[in-house]
Length: 103
Picture 1 (cartoon, rainbow, N blue to C red):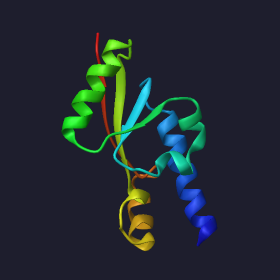
Picture 2: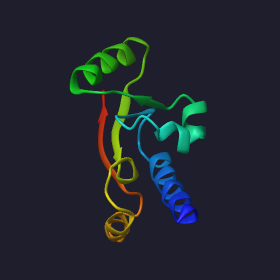
Picture 3: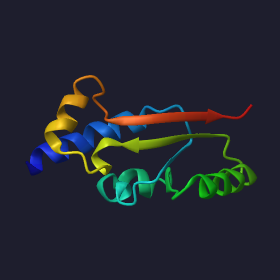
Picture 4: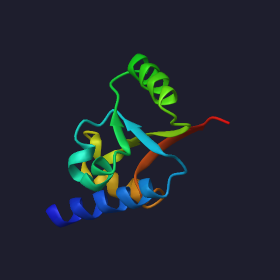
């Protein structure tokens, strides 16, 4: 089971690396722990709510960030692994993504 979990996290990280944005925001508090390279590169940020996302976007714009993707990952949910596996058949990265880019 541990190997399978590591594989799912690796697939999600690969999918995140292909996103068309400078940064990734998520509500998953432990995402950076299973994808430390994204954390070390300064690409991933945690937001808790719509209000904190708005505040984060404002600060990001202020420092020159013009694109971000909001990402939720199936492995951050309480969904059992057997159901996650079914979803991965159609969404191998296990991500729900909304990307934003400013001109």
